[in-house]
Image (tube, rainbow, N blue to C red; front, side, top):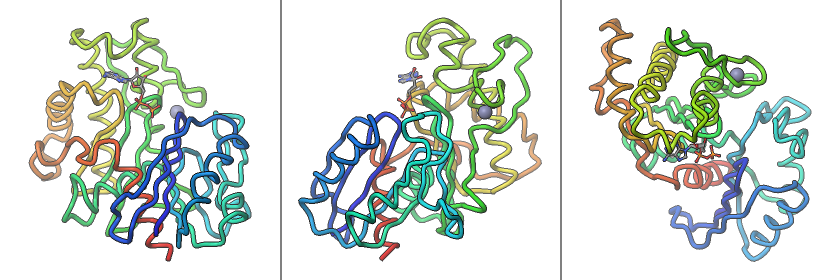
Length: 284
Ligand code: ADP
Ligand code: ZN
């Protein structure tokens, strides 16, 4: 039996599956303090005899096997979780192999194996929600280096009509600072979901996301780009992003067909947890 934790800043999804990744039991718990949350995690996994656990976590996290703080959540804005030894706490309770990467790398792995990028060797997964986060799998491996990518914080060219200064506490007007759900809300004084009919909102949003996707395409050349998260529920964004991307790229790179290249997640809300189960099996 395989175990998985999709550790998000708002909620944790816990699951156990058979060796074919058929989910046997799953539970969603709110992310509160580490103490409270781990107590619930233990209560869930204590019921099963898992042979490995895969964890995809919000971050930033330490994924460097040579680092003393490997397995930690590091400098997160969720202060209660800062410097939490996630893998250490789990290993103390369960002495089984564990896989560990970012929530978005896990989602990319899930979509590559069973979702929108099935049959490909690479894909990029970007979530546009409370924050902007991206993960990628290239030749079957999640992209990691000294740490993990932070694709949400790349710099973008400002839209000439956008006077919002951006809300990223580190960079102000980075991609996340300009395009995450809370940025839309701060720019217009209304929640993104209440602005569905205001065209300008989505033009500006697409202007930023297309630039980001162009940078990811030029640096990683993924076979598919999958866009998820709450803001992408505004599906009118897809054609706007594809058009702006095409305009910016100006035929420099022959990408796959736009409709095939920039797509929605196929596993919907299960991309992350599926990726975590795959991580568990790989850890074995
Ligand atoms: P999280 O990022 O916390 O996992 P979400 O992906 O749902 O959660 O992101 C929440 C953000 O997405 C909020 O800023 C919210 O305003 C925005 N959002 C959620 N649903 C929609 C929607 N249908 N249309 C536009 N924005 C949405
Ligand atoms: Zn930033």
